[in-house]
Amino acid sequence: MLTRLSIRNIVLIDALDLDFVGGLGVLTGETGAGKSILLDALGLVLGNRADSGLVRAGEDQASVTAVFDFGRLPAPIADALAEAEIDVEPGESLILKRRLKADGGSKAFVNDQPVGVALLREIGPALVEIHGQHDDRGLINPRGHRMLLDRFASADVAGLEAAWRDWSAKREALDAARARVAKAAEDQDLLVAYLEELTALAPEADEEESLAEARARMQQGERISEDLAELAHLFQGSDSALANLRTAARRLERVAGEHPLLADALGALDRAVIEASDAEEHIERAAEALSFEPAELDRIETRLFDLRALARKHRCDVADLPEVARGYREQLDSIEAGSEQIAALEVAASLAGERYRELAQALHAARVAGAEKLDAAVAGELAPLKLDAAKFRTAVTPLAEERWGPHGMDAVEFLISTNPGADFAPLAKIASGGELSRFILALKVALAEEGGAATVIFDEIDRGVGGAVASAIGDRLSRLASNGQLLAVTHSPQVAARGQQHYMIAKSSEGTVTRTSVALLDEAARKEEIARMLSGAEVTDEARAQADRLLEGV
Image (cartoon, rainbow, N blue to C red; front, side):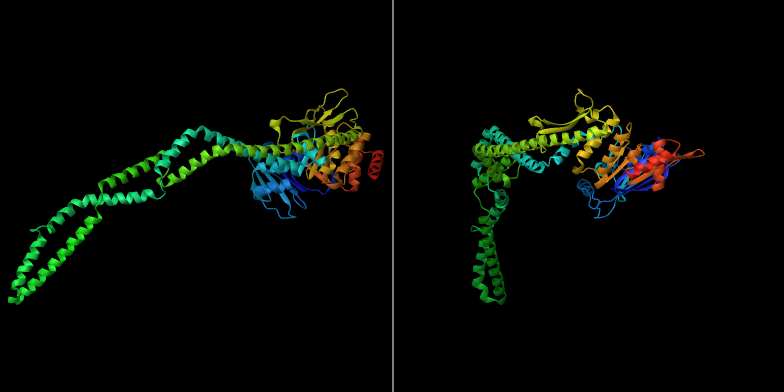
């Protein structure tokens, strides 16, 4: 609930700090004293549009700070703060602040962390609910009517939401399968041709590398084969270098014993013959290793060209061709198995749809029954609020199938008829602002157990009424505030007497400076203010006596 409101330099308010507690708090004062300034300031910190006209004349900037305390943060607020990565410890105050510059710029903060104004607008409805003349928020907005009725009727919306998600998932799976099979069927002839071509070539994952290495070896052998042939000629034939060395060695051998130097020469010549023979052997082995059949090179090059051409055709690497072939085979298999798969998915989607319809129809019945009870509860509140000629109806309207969703098959809206014979119309279209506020009060009383914002504010709900009607309004406001916090801006002494806290708003002038102030009244000052409300500008003893009776009767 709202525990503190601090305002600086807003219109006629230079500095104001107000503390609030639970229960019913009332705010009174002369017309024009500045009650609307308080609501404008509170609206600013809850994310309303920043209007530079709110900055007090002569000041550069204004600010509003609102402090809220909860035993536990309401779920919508906790979720929004978690998404914004703002941590609020259990028991820690939630502090909203808005700064507004005279040039129109503004900044927003939550617990001293800068935030976007959108976050204030998101959590604002769960913090404070304001009902005033021609207000278009809270209970007026039909977007929340279905949720309120479901809470009132204790309807199983969670089960329906789960059924909707299940049905939606199964329909999506069915649609995807149908699209997949239809696409595959359209391309069936092409898929068959592709698969036949790949099957005929039978590519292997690592084939390109081995073929490229083999081709490189053959091309290398082709380049040096002529040189090897010429070298082989030097070692072969009767007039080759090796043959001449051998002939020289035989001749020298015959005379080598006749002189020591000839023996050395023979040794060197024998070594040369041996080295030359080794060289000849190595050359022969190299020539043998590098030899190939020209037809084999043609085969390898043709295979490599075909594989690479096919990879380009399918926009993949050669190594991926076997996987591409498997993919085409699976698509063709899916065409054959597709009808069975689709049939199974159709059954699953149909069963999920039946389950959703069953739960949605049960929810519709619960809503209709709940609407009757709600209508009766609201009707019981209308006469005491001087709305005895009015009628209230909760319209539960079936939606077209394309508009079904996780919340069911119904649209829910609160309708009213203010005069006998008049057509029912949405709450937002009611003509009288006073009647609208009292209708909202009747609804709030009927829905008292269904929760809402932490703090509820009624702005001049008693405008234009008095006596028994004002007393009935005060009684209902007091009942609504018994388990929460409710603030009422009022001109009615009957309502003011019900307050547990009483604030008086006053406007004063000092020379050319006008200020609005707010004071928390003690018992004596409160009696005097209620007497003023009863008698007007001059407070009489009779008015004070009547104020005593009002306060004693609470």
